Length: 344
Image (cartoon, rainbow, N blue to C red; front, top):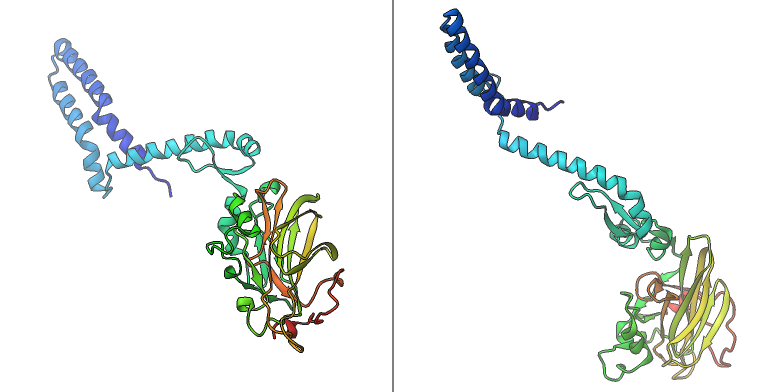
């Protein structure tokens, strides 16, 4: 439906403003001329009637036709609309150049002629909850590189179970841990990440943690860029850890106080990350006594600013076992590769 409110208010303003004054003056000039030269005196009357009609006619017509207008509001809204249109046109003319230069998601909102920009990662993270389900994990790690704000989601491995986030395992507020390699690593981070220890059972100290058993934690990193991504894998496992990338063992650690750093390459597509942990028996068979075990892992870009995965963020799951038999296994161990054993 067409809105004639701005037109009506504009015409009313003209008739009650300078246009009305000009027409009245012109009419008076003509009426005086007619009176002088033709002795016709009614011209003055018609001019006054016309002037009154110009000034009061529009309000009377609006009242007759039940048009309720506050022209000060209408004119303000019309001016604002014109301002928005001008801003939007100017903004859209610059949008493509700004968007490509900044590598951000830029849009025009009409309030400014300058494009309003947010990083692709910020836009992605603001809507990630719309994509995550109970069966998948979504990431925005490659949003800036891909210039795409749509989260990249990966389904959990069938049969996997949720790990336990065990923040108390390495409590950096505790003086006994404050100087540990893990706490020093946390203190060095400036990427907004906060990796947390994960464990196979709550507390990692109960009877369910088989002291001589292996437990494997797994996550998947999707690289949608079509090109390899160089990254670092930081890992600290209690007591020993074996680290696998896409089914291949890349490293082993037997020093639980050490935060290890391994260079890796994330190939295009899904990259499966496995960490197998083992502590040590504290008692006789069959359970060898409970002994806490767990791992802290984070995979970042070479510069450290991009976090592709971190334990404690919901992306890691416990699986039946490592993809291949780890090298350097202790002679005494429990072959605990099944879900039932891991959940005992």
